[in-house]
Image (cartoon, rainbow, N blue to C red):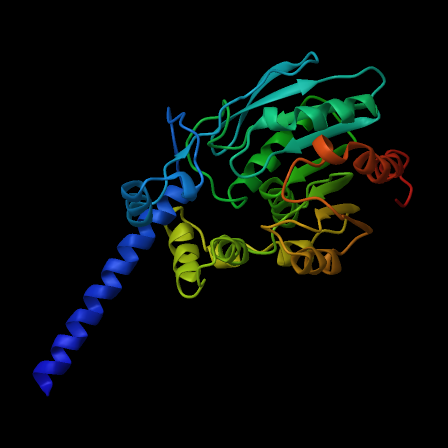
Length: 318
């Protein structure tokens, strides 16, 4: 009986070690982009059987986000010191009402926000489009899904202040929105307000959503991925929670999301919204998924965002 018990314990221990090695490889690849890997990620239905097996065992190589297009408007390239050397595009407009700091999402880079920046410029705002660490022309290849990117937000804000830009509003999509919330929660930066699209509620929740999309059970793999994703990058990923950050955000916030978003639930949006400590607005686009809203819903987006921004500019309640 003792021999059998020892054998079971050895097998159990071996299984535990192998599962964690498997998860560590996936967590590493989820938070580290591959430089020079230009091949587009294909749908799992397009992969061959050997490719599917390799991806299941070793994870998927994620190409480092690179600049896809150049703006049609004039801009200045600036470099900002942070936990990485950050690259950004700065555009000035005549008689500006203020400045918008634009923050992209996971797997994105600053040119993915060109249409947003152009619209903000038409509304009378200077824009700073920021490449987070590991993206675009910024240094490093690491992404922490908004955790360390919050330091990038702080340093970009400090840069703008040092150049005498004022009335600064933060715009962020998905991970970029979470980074804004965390940056304010950590540093109480004097932003005028935030416009945030489709932010996830927590790191664990967004990892679970990936399992839901492929129809796989989330427990315990989502918890292990969250643990190792944070551990590999030096932070507690279970504490990376937008709902907690929202409790410390007492500036005006406009929160937007899509009713058909496959990655962020409306419950997550409600939880963030309900915990925001300052003036707030919420708008749900009925047909939107986790996507660039201006590309498909430009007039609807402008109708909701424009009054909010005007209210910030004159200091009125939006």
